[in-house]
Image 1: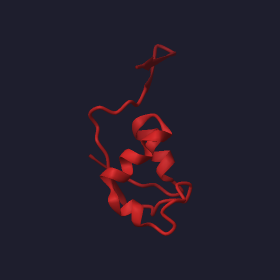
Image 2: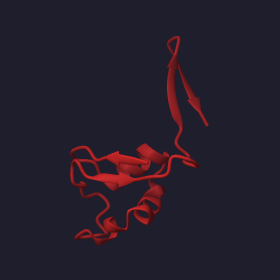
Image 3: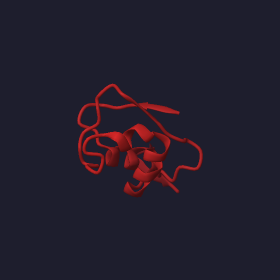
Length: 77
């Protein structure tokens, strides 16, 4: 799957958004080796380039899905 980066998003933002946890940064870097070549590569709080695309795996992600159903918030595990 591909995700298009929005303005001011960091790799940590994407890890949380796509996988539900900041520890998924390693997974995103493995799927997008060019992220490791950024200057500085270690600055995971630095914004990514808006409009660039990031590869991610949809299956097996641990993201919790929030849904609102009849006014009640449902969290799926």
